[in-house]
Length: 384
Ligand code: LLP
Image (cartoon, rainbow, N blue to C red; front, side, top):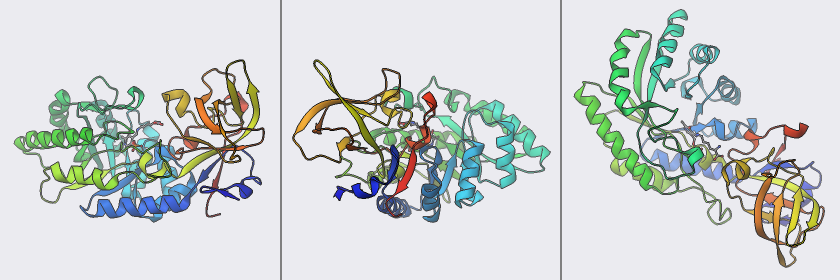
């Protein structure tokens, strides 16, 4: 029996909760992003932080995307999944020495550097290994992404990136760091951005900056515009593929590139978000005085986004066609924030029903924890 895209009969053989990945949708998304970026020869590096499940990474590597990593662990995962080192970039405000050495030894394409202090360390470690590190400077463009406060990164007071006011000083320091080669600038303004005007503002800021750098005699090989394209959490069936066409077109329309300049992007959520659902079973229906609670075997240890960011994920009862009733959907963790949704209309719920929490392919499985000594959620795939 299927409900929507979900093979319920198959699910009965699996221990819940688990992530279920629609691999056909992932493939279609990869075809779309490749075709849309290809129109302008833009290069796409998948942000591994969104989901590092080996099968998902393998599929993305096969599709020819590069990888954007933020730790030594992610570099290892990307290499193991088949991403060539020359398509791996490494970002993050706190790169440890061993992680920098791993990047240098594996021959990754570029370090996205976030501070003057980090430039000095990369220069030293590259000197020790007799190598030259290719670096891009992550600049804080001071563009408001109008997204959730915990996932906005491009404004002034931020641990990320080099502030515009300090860029000149950092550039002045480069000639004294002979084991570094500057390839370009890197930006990232935030995540789950659905209003393209924030990206337009970024493109305009990049143009201003390029003019300033040119006045200093600097020509850049590459411009990396980060990630951030949002997905439609409310309509996972109608709009399962993010607006890649409009997204790349907005940059193409505005960016004033110099001859030979490469443009890079680092989408995470928009690649993997829609293809994953968290599948969970109802343990109890608790009838309160005013409310009814559907208590699931999944909790915020399996999907933390609702608890951490008040994020909305559409929830469906896969086992019932009965008339809708209103429930709070909660997990078993001993914390009052372990709530997936409140006052949610669901087909009448009974113990043992299967629930799908949709659009959970990004920042879901990878952010799972073992709090309360819980087992990590499993992963199942539509093509297995
Ligand atoms: N590049 C950089 C430098 C980033 O910091 C991020 C995300 C990305 C690319 C990918 O962004 P995306 O395309 O996925 O928006 N855990 C949060 C999201 C944190 C995003 C952190 N940086 C969530 O569940 O909403």
